Image 1 (cartoon, helix red, strand yellow):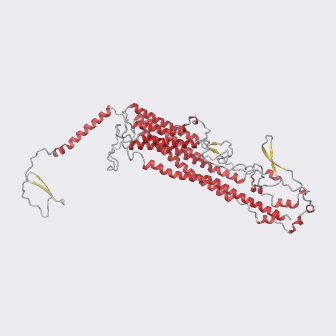
Image 2 (cartoon, rainbow, N blue to C red):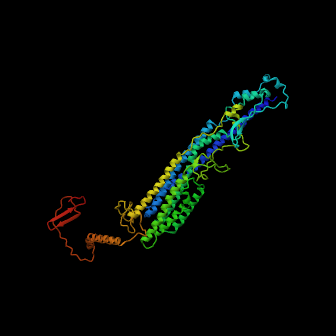
Image 3 (cartoon, rainbow, N blue to C red):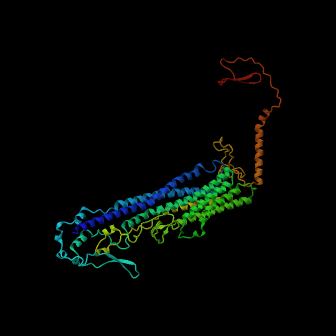
Length: 573
């Protein structure tokens, strides 16, 4: 009479398992969407800042629409803006790889592993009962008294514990005698519930799709992590660049001082807030972490605007003020160099400490090698290693092997592929390049201060840049080191250019030589234009000349009384 109930129970178990597998497929899609959605956001931000970055480098480059700023601030600006472009390209490239790998991993899991457990026709045939099924029963089963003979009991594996209380292996409960179990139950267990060779279900068992996905996720989680860090590094350099660019534009072209201070304060505050919101953890290497340079580097533009205010002020030129400006510039250079070293230290990957799972927070296993400094800002969520209390995996129970063989089947865990360090190696190359740029520009700054500004460059030798009719005010590019020179490549209208006695003497000599050349060239013209000078004009005389046929002279010239030259409009004569 219970054959229908047993068949309904069998089909209901598969229906529940299919519903749970549908949830598992949603798990795969949700975990993948967490990565792909972040990468799409990073792409949008990257495209916008590609335009803004190139606007500062190309269309709005300094020295095109006006005099170029001093060399010491241009060094800081160009290293920052070029490093920003480098990190922008790096994190954009990493986002493409992370999104593509995550999508491919999800497709692999959904098409190969996380499939609906639909029973085959053969299984359904075995599950149904026919009218002659009673003929296969034993006599004792037919005359079994209900509720008196012990009910059927499954063989369930239980974890064994060692002396310390940790689970070491699995053991099974005692198997009841087959004579005490009904024959239909034994046949049903053998044909329908014998499992598919899967590991036994233990209290600490994890669904297979979580273990498989965690192993796959390790391949693109590092790309995801360093894409996020690259966005932070890019924004740090870009905010410094836009602040310095604003200063150069305001001082050299707008000739204002207070707007430079206000706009620098705005960008410096934004820079400080970005670093404070992203740098929350601490790196395992604490070589430079003790300096806490991230608290000072956002305010280097405020130090630079002080130097620009002095450099373009109305103070009397002098070596003391010039030395103070160079000291301010060196403070900025050293701060940024230490910051470049700090960027390398913060991005170094390390094994993660064991962390508990909290709703709404990130979580990834301890064996993943990721930077600890940015653990709170990369927002990576990996599948759990164990189910919450009260949750069960029906698919695992259906696949689990019954009986004494279950103890010998190991639990299925993620594939151990080791730490994924290839994205770190690429990102490390970008950071080392940034450190090298700062070392090179510091060396160049020291060389310029010792040997003089721009002494390695060839003199341009032209007075006006094209188009000259639009910019006729451009001064010549010279090496004299005086005020209002270097208009094309820096220093024009700077107030603290040193004026020595030798420079004044050179200018006087140049003016004297130019005056002599002008007097020699323009003297006859000045005499001809002198209207007060009385000249005795010769009286024209009529000459008896017969012109050739067709010649109509338009220009005449004579020498003495015997030679006359005539030309017409056709250049004949």
